[in-house]
Image 1 (tube, protein in one colour):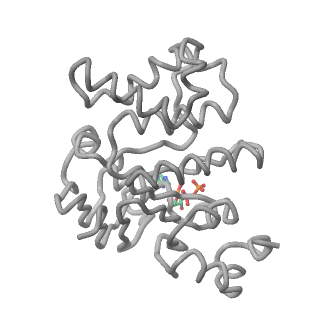
Image 2 (cartoon, protein in one colour; image 1 turned 45 degrees about the vertical axis):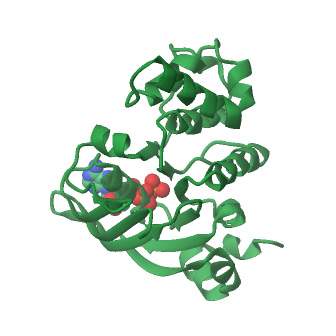
Length: 243
Ligand code: ATP
């Protein structure tokens, strides 16, 4: 049984179909990249999976439990946690307070302490800056805080929406290395991205989305080696991967 098993998911906004009949899986400890151009439907799919878009059809199973009809907080409590597009850090709260927001599904002092420990272990810089206001952080630190906040929710599977946006190449590498390390602890990661090279560098498998449909899937190595896929679906620049 896969950790995350998505079957036939369709996301509509009224009459607009943004995602059509998408099926995918994420295993424990895997980074799965969801690649596609601007408007391909990546955000819509992730928002549908975590329950943020009404009008989502299909099955979303986590560890065999059907979550498709549950509200967002119950999916989070079950272990399906999102790192939202744009990070959504609360600037007026400290780093630690932002992390505790991510632990909202966990009850009791001991659980909340464990949540903070998990985030600080992966990101020592957040511990150093725990009393600093969220608004004072650099873009890279804010993205680490967004990932740390997801981790504080004791996730089994984290879905991430374009964590590379607005970061320098060096900071993208730093953040993505941490994402890989998070997966290596057994958490599944579904990573929606337009940054193809950075994603392929840490992904185990890839799904390529175009106009709301999965048009290709394979291991990261297979996708990277397939010039036709790279050019047709992921932009000519993507062919430079590894160059
Ligand atoms: P991006 O990289 O820009 O975030 P994306 O791959 O995440 O792109 P989506 O944002 O999911 O793509 O958009 C997929 C399609 O759904 C687009 O045609 C978009 O215009 C449409 N769409 C997205 N959100 C809404 C909405 N709230 N109402 C109506 N249509 C929407």
